[in-house]
Image 1: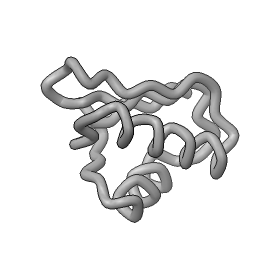
Image 2: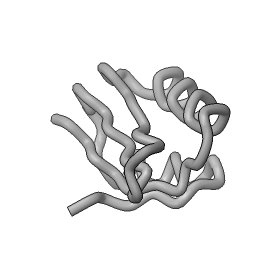
Image 3: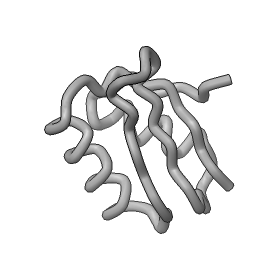
Length: 69
């Protein structure tokens, strides 16, 4: 499954920190945050956990996170 989320991750340092945290905590494939997009889209490939778990985890790291529809 591919997870696509709207975030408020704003810079490369936050992006690297969040991608590292996700990759360390969850078995995922490619993980990317598009800082150029207005929704700061977080895309996670090969997501094996529920979207709600990712949302909760990202929020605990101090960022906004919601499913992008």
